[in-house]
Length: 250
Length: 267
Ligand SMILES: Nc1ncnc2c1ncn2[C@@H]1O[C@H](COP(=O)(O)OP(=O)(O)OP(=O)(O)O)[C@@H](O)[C@H]1O
Ligand SMILES: [Mg+2]
Image 1 (spheres, each protein chain N blue to C red):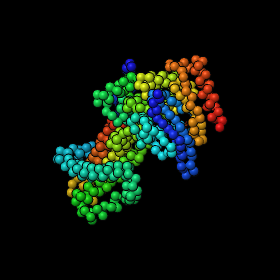
Image 2: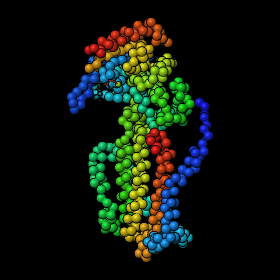
Image 3: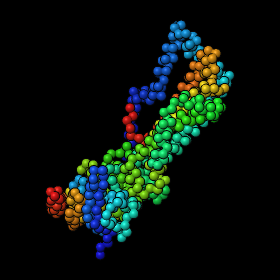
Image 4: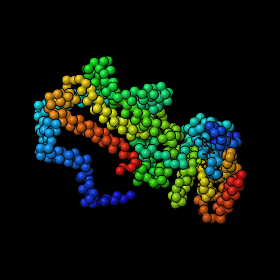
């Protein structure tokens, strides 16, 4: 029995500017089951960020329907978490206060959860540091911890590792998978990176551009932990790449 | 994580000792040269009395209590005017920063008022409020108002839209949006506004006290000028300089404490 958590039907979105209107998304249908890990891959400008923002409720001007647990999304809420492409930390708060954000770390239960998350993202020694003292990868880990603190039902990640080097990226991918296994949250992650898309996902969503539509959804039936250089992994990678290249030619 | 302690090198240690005095060597040099020129008889004794004689005068005024009396009155005036102007500037700056309709309706008028020089309105204030304390405090307040108003407005508008989006996905209440996002991001500008307002308050004080008063440092200077007591004039000027610098340093201290998170070029 499948447990549909997020249901997107006939979703279309246009931006209207002085220079005319741009259709960013056209007739997007997507079903996400509870606890799935979805990765979305597509060319730059195909509407991936737009899709995530609509699901997060940051933009409520669209056609079609988006339902979370059978109900439309009225606006941004604590049950949907969002990690932006950049860390977007508050420069005047130290790491632990950034993770707590609007909550107070001096409260016992918040304290406990912040400590646990610091442990998971391996930043315990930097709890009192300010963002200006962190590297890009460390800042991004703080941003992920901040999103996880509220234990959202769904975590949306918009190219969260885009600006990182291969080594940090690999470490954070592992960390994210570990969190996913531990907490059993639903994850939707946008990426440009084929390996990343196949490594993390139950399902890879390949998008077409102009207007943004879903080209194909490819289930990845590989057990975790996955080996990036294994033959089966490479087979899936080729499959996704094939779709991706055809999408580009359109 | 291991703590690594680095011993300060000799050069470094010299710098930490020398730093608080770094701003003093220039005035000190001027005083020395000045004293030397007076001693050599190059300077006119009435127009430019020697630093030594100014110091003696300072001591006399201090002992007799005259100086403290005037200083107290001036400080109260400046603080009342600054307090009033700054408070109104802060509140209106916040209102205009937050609410676009308020900005549209009142900001253009304030921008117009801002360009009128102090001295031009002084006669009007005297006509309206007499030459009592009211017109003095209001004149100072008027000057103190603008820097804080403009900088608060600017600071609130400089809040990062991307961070604002973060507060929305994290479901911040309006109150938390104000205290955790808007105020901290406006704080550098607000503190700058406070510094500028304080400076303008001292300037306004001089104008106010010279337009007619019976006490205050401005009065003391004006009064001494009439009797050609140049040393008293110098003491008055010196007091303005020192008090102005002290109040500025106080705000900078707050800046250093509250804005330590900033990641700017430090020179
Ligand atoms: N605020 C906006 N106003 C007008 N057009 C917009 C706006 N935001 C996005 N668009 C348009 O919508 C389309 C999709 O943008 P989106 O940011 O979703 O792309 P993306 O897939 O996330 O790209 P990238 O991988 O480069 O981040 C683009 O053609 C863009 O020009
Ligand atoms: Mg994007």
